[in-house]
Amino acid sequence: MDFEKTIKNAYAESVEGERFGDTEEELLSLQKHIRSCKRIVVPNRNTVKTKAINEVLTKFNLPSAEHLCIHTNSADLSRTPAITKALMALDTCDCDLVIARGRLGVPGSGSLLVIMDKKGRILSAATSPSHILHGKEVEDAVRDEITHALLRIGFMVVE
Image 1 (spheres, helix red, strand yellow):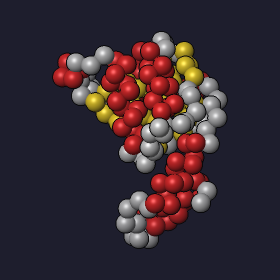
Image 2: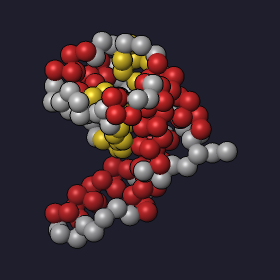
Image 3: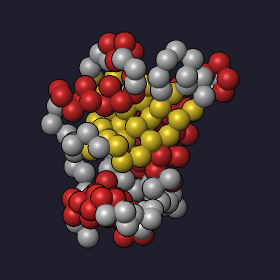
């Protein structure tokens, strides 16, 4: 089913009180939507996160992302920095998909990696605890987060 129609159907089910969870058809539609994205961007000021994300996207046989060099420091002034970074990317470039990673909320709340489409809809996400707790290098934490975000919507590593 077409992704937009899938979303409209789910809305209608919710309004009618007939929504009882995600369906396999919806999951497949979401996967197809992500696979169809031509321009995927990762907004930040360096390429470290983009490199780690692309290593994982390759393992899942998904298109590579490009680095969108924008200063995202101001996103840390918002209540949801990672989501704000994704929205900044949508506001500053023409893309199909954004993969943004930043702080989850207040300082100490950990990190959030979010996959957002060009309409600002969150397609998947993954969190990790504060760096002080997990002690991982940024690249390793990002690899773990993007892997989890893809696995949670049914993507599988291609051997």
